[in-house]
Length: 83
Image (cartoon, rainbow, N blue to C red; front, side, top):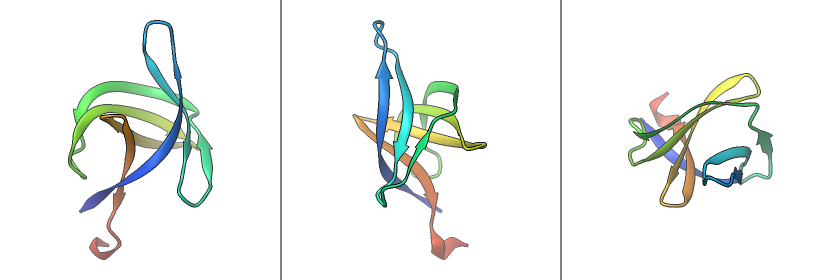
């Protein structure tokens, strides 16, 4: 089972209104640049629930699914108890 981890995201919005995440900031102060945007689509978070825009990004060689739902950004995190 997974849950949502809300994060702060630095984004770029172009003149046509398209949003591109540039950097993800974690609660503990760490931040990671988005190396590449692989896919953008309206989709549900099947692991943590909710629906919105899903940004599939490459961050430090890993594929990350970043969701924007009503102006809030989150990633899916596994529950420690489920492991």
